[in-house]
Image 1: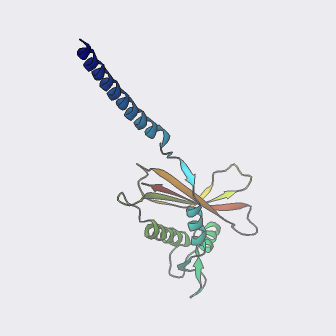
Image 2: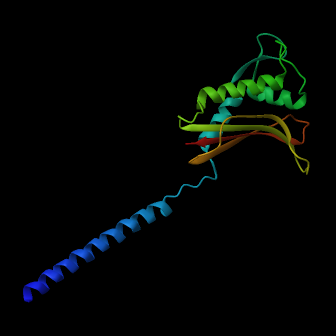
Image 3: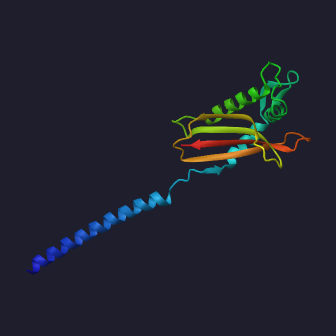
Length: 179
C-alpha cells in the first residue's frame, strides 16, 4: 500500500510540474506581446529631418534665370511659393520641377516597396501664414507606396523662410512607413 501511495504522489508531482510549465509559457507569451507592442504613431526622426535639411541644398536641374545657374531645392520651394506659374528655362513650371525632383530623390534614396524596409513615404510642402486661421497653401504633395502594415512611422520636417517681406513659413514634412 505504501508503494501505491509513493507512485501516486510522484504522478501528482509530475502533473503539478507540467501545469506550472504550461502557465509559465503562457505568461511569457502574454508578457512579450504586451511589453513589446510596437507603437504605430508618428515618431520624430533626426535622420528624416537631416535628410530634408541636406535636400534643401541639393542642386536641381532647373535653371530659372539663365544657364548654368541651376537652383537649389530651397530656391525652387521659394519660387514655387512666390509664383506657381514661374518656369524653368527648359519650359517646366518650377513647382512641377520641384515635385518631380523630390519624388526622384525620395524614390532613389528610400526605394519604397513591400519587399523593402521602407514601405511608403508621404511628402507635404506648404506655406502657412503666421497668425492666420486659414488653411495652409499646399505647394507640393506626393507619396509613393501604401501606408499599411507599418511597424512604425518616422517623420521629420524642415522650415524654409519664404523671404524677408513674407509673414509666414514654408514647411516641408516627410513621413516614412517602416516595415
